Length: 301
Image 1 (cartoon, rainbow, N blue to C red):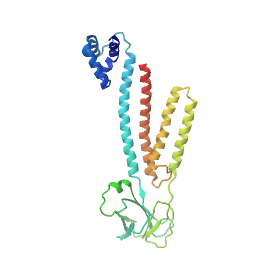
Image 2 (image 1 turned 180 degrees about the vertical axis):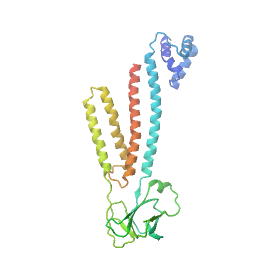
Image 3 (image 1 turned 90 degrees about the horizontal axis):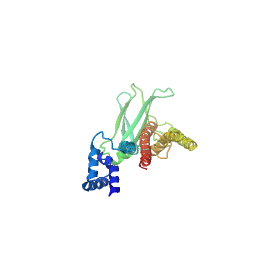
């Protein structure tokens, strides 16, 4: 019975602060029903500002503080995981699926003085265009057109009618409308010039360079971490820094898969960086929780 009382009194401060598991609560309450001495100890433990006798309260206070920090970190980590899942889902479901050119995918009708109305097939849910004067100095304008859809629109969109946009040169200049398929095939002039010679628009390769830098940084940090294994504080800081390249690599794989070329570089790079910051914050919290568990284990011992 005495050993049981000692155990109960060790955990009474945590019980009084409601920082124990439901099973421990049941165990303590069952004991308090039959032990007058422990009940008195419990009443004293509930008194604010009371120091518990001869016992050294410093380790207990440290443990209590670390448990509170761990609880807050766990809540934040859960919120970051949810945010990362939402951003990842958006990146995948909203990724552009560029459509190859086919007859009727996009048509053009003249509107007003130097304008065009672009009418897209029902499969198209998003489009973009750029109007610019002939680079060779001709008295006409080009209108480069891109069209795409995405998984979200294919699965969930209930679109009625065809997408259409009106473009204008701002003056009485003819327009040559050119479709850019973004799939490695040549561009197609679908309005204004039957003798147009197509060209191939290549994807941007910058994401590959950024991915290479992240991998190189991770390898370098791992090597440094091994070299300073006898310096715990320095190694801990290097480990924290090394979590960002890991977050960036994971983010790249989520947004772009294993592909390093992109026809929508600004979108992809922004999502990769944004998602990597969320993942990095989550990894830092997870790392902090792991270290807290180790410290709490040492205090308990």
